[in-house]
Image 1 (spheres, rainbow, N blue to C red):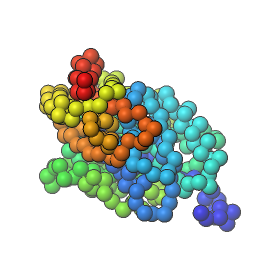
Image 2: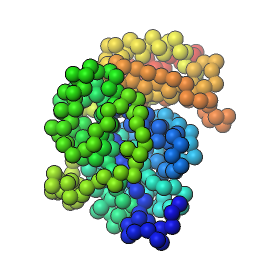
Image 3: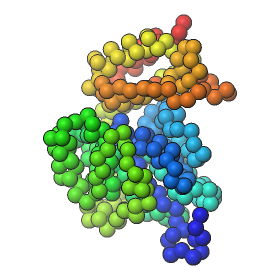
Image 4: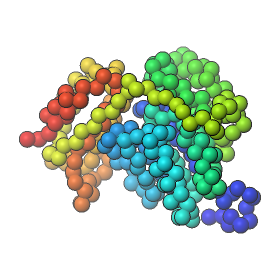
Length: 329
């Protein structure tokens, strides 16, 4: 690492990238690209989940980076104190990494997260906000802008926008989506991507966060600590100790997504399939589902299957019965 004694003032502050975007937009896909590409830099990663069971930490690839997980609360609300403590703790190991990446829950307003790096004196002296990077789902953004103010907030405060899943829309739809983004934020750089594929230098170390621009847009940015969430969106999570029958699971989840897909904003799980030593990662946004094996279970790791549903009008008993019914007797 560079010798900070010879660098310009402020260079000793660790750069922080806030990675945000609505549920299922592709934040974890982008994070995995950052952690696996050969760019010669190391990052401490802070992951925030919306739900009582953590799954995102398992969806992040195994790396040498330090990963911290904060569950069951929005990073801009109940766990903000945890964020301050984690950043403070990281500063004691400043020589171990080149930057910090904070992946927020898909329901987070990035403004209070960014605010942390200006209003908390200890954090401000040791870390600097480099950029807010927002991942946008090209297919579902029009619907999200109608039913979720968080999606608009995430775009409004972005310095860099990753317009992802462009392969799922037509060129006309893509142009219309980009126009909607520009109507909210005309300053951010927009990158069109499939599976969040783009050069990492277009995401990290941008020096893009402009406090003056933010204050012009939101004059109360540094002193307003109040914001609202969409209370209609809730999360339920389940786990089973027995192995999962893949045929039963595929039949159940397929029928569930077909029937309740409009209400299921995000579904994700780590599954232990019967007679298989590999972890299976399942993810879905509405009715669009995907899944793949992500490596073997560790020898000392309990093979517990977990699934998380984030959406509206979730029927907890019904979802629990369905998931538990996929377990091998």
